[in-house]
Every structure is written in C-alpha cells, then in structure tokens.
Image (cartoon, rainbow, N blue to C red; front, side):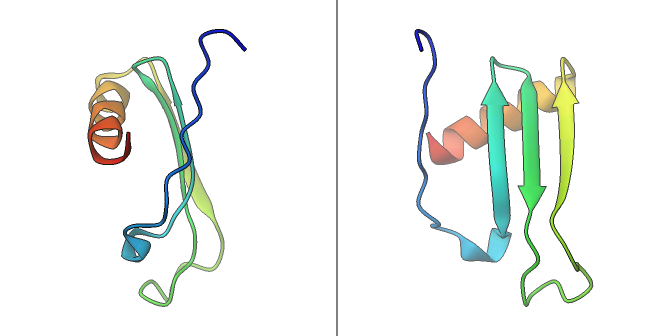
Length: 68
C-alpha cells in the first residue's frame, strides 16, 4: 500500500525478548515481550499500546534509532 513501510529486523539482542512491534506514524506504538529464561516469572506474552502521547513519541523515536 502507498505510504506503508515494513522493516524486518533480525534478532540482534535476544536478551530483550521483543515479541512484536508495531509503529504507526510518529506517536503510536504497540510492543510485546515474549517469555525468556532471563525472566522466569513471565509466563506468557505481555504487551502495551500507547497512542498520541509523549511517551509513545519518545519510544517510537528510540525504536527507529535502534532498528530502522
């Protein structure tokens, strides 16, 4: 689709256990974390969503800097 970008990122930092990541525009983020041996109390995938907040804008910028 026009204006849609998809970036496949290799697992360069497996200790972060990022499950899924969705960035929309500059201030919408959906991020999930997968259980890992480093986090024995995490039993299943957990996620958060932030849209239109300062937190989302900063997090999206950090993610783009690190992965895109």
